[in-house]
Picture (cartoon, rainbow, N blue to C red):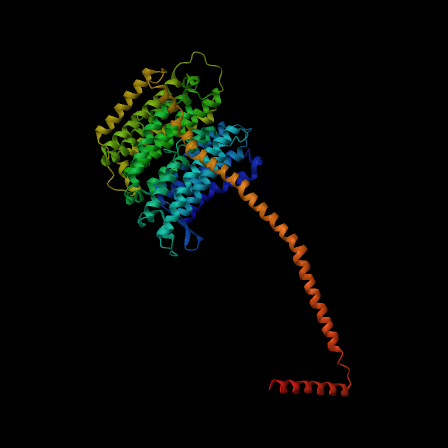
Length: 620
C-alpha cells in the first residue's frame, strides 16, 4: 500500500525534475512524457482514493516522514491529477513548438507533484516541504517568459506575498513543538490530526499560523492582490494554479484542520467571516474588471472565499464539493480565455465582442462554466454553494446572508463576461483557429461542470459524507435551492439587460474596485515602504557608524602596532640583550675559580669557611 502512495507523489516529481535537467533536448518529447505521467498519476490517485494507503519513511530523529490518503485527501488527489491531465492536454495542442516545452511541462509536473505532497501530508514538516516547492515552482511558472521584466516582477510579487504568509506555518510548527513539552516523540505534536490537542497559549499560536498561511496561499483578504499579478503567466498556468492546486491549497488546509479552528474558540469565526468578506469584496472587484483574466482572477478569490467560509462554518462536505466543482469550472474558463488570447491577441472584454460566436465550441464550453460559476441550475456550483451555505445558515443567519450576497455577485460578474463574448461584433478581424486538440479538453471540463451536480444531492451526497467521514452535516432545504437559483437568474437577466453601460458607482469606488481595493498599494505603504526605509536606515548606520567604527578601530590598531614596534619592542629587545650580557659576564666570572688544581680548591674552601665563621660570630 505504501508503494502506491510513494509512486503517486514520486512519479510527477521525478518526471518533472528529469525534464528540467534534460532541458531543450527534450522539447519534442516533453508533451508526450508529461501526458503519460499525468494519466498514470490520475490512475494512481483513483486507486489511492479507494484504498486509502499510508506511507512512512525515516526523516528526523523521532519524526518520520508520513503520508496518508483519507476521504478528503483522496478526493483532492483525484481532482488535482484530473485537472492537471486536462490542462496538459490543452497545453500540448496550444503551446507553441518554439517555446521551451521541456521547462514548461517539467515545471507543471513538479508543481502538480508538490500539490500532491501537500494534499497527502500527514505532518507539518512534510506539508511544509510540499508547500515550499509549490511556491517556488509557481514563481517559475508565472515568470515563465522571464525575458519580460513585467512578468518577472509579477512573479516576484506573487512569490514574496505568499512567502510572507507562509511564515505562519513555521510559527505553527514551532508552537506545536513547544506544546509537546520537548519530548523526543514529537511526531504526535506535529501531526495535522494532533494540532487541536495542544494547550494554550500554543493552541492559539498554531491556529494563527495556520490561518495566516492558508489565507495567503488562497489569496484571501488582505493577500488577494497577488493573484492579479499571477495573470502574467501563461493561461495553462493560470488554469492549473487557480483551479485545483496552489490557490485552493489554503482552503484545503483549513478544511483539513477544522478541529483546530473549532478548538481555538476563535479561529472558526475569523475564517468564516474572512471568507464571506472575500466573496463579497472580490466579487465587486471582478465586476469592475475590463480584462477577462483579471475578472477570472478576482472571481477565483471570491469563489475560494466560499470554501474558506465553509471551513469556518464546519461545512466540510459543502466546502469540498465547492472545491471540486470550482476546479472544473475555473480551469475551463481560464483555458478558454487563453484560447481566445492566442486566437484574437487580446483579453480585454470590449475587444472580445463576438468571440464566442466566432469559436462556437469554445464559446459553448465557456458558457457552461460561466453559468455554473453564476450559480444557475442545474450546474454543479449552484448546488455545491447551497450545500455549504446550509452550514453557514446553521451557524449564523448573518453569515448565510453574506454568503448569499457573494453568490449574487457571482452571477453578476459571470453574466457580464458572457454578455461581452456573445454580443455580436461590429467588425471582427481574421483570427487564428483554435486547434482541435485544444478544444476537446474544454468539452471534457464542460461535461464535468454538469455531471458533478449529482454529488450535491442524495444518495450521492450521503456517499460524500461517508467518504469524508463527517456526520451531522446540514443539508439545504428546497427553498434554499430555489432562493439561490432565483437570485442568480434575476441577477443574470439584469446584467444582460444592463449591457455595457457604466456601473452605477461613484468614480472613487469604481476605481478602487478596478484597482483590487488598492491592496497592493496598501501593502507597499504599510509594509514595503517601511521595510525599505528601515533597510536604508540600516545601510546608512552600517556605512556611517559601523564602517567608520571598524575603520577607526583598524587604524588605531595599526598605530598601536607601529608604536609597539618602535618603542616597546626596542625596550624589550634592550632588556633581553642586557640580561644576556649580564648572564655571559657572570658565566665568565664563575669559570675563573674552576682551575682543576686541588690546592686552589682547598684554599677557596678555607676562605669560604673563614668568612662563614666570621659571619656566625658577628651574628651571634
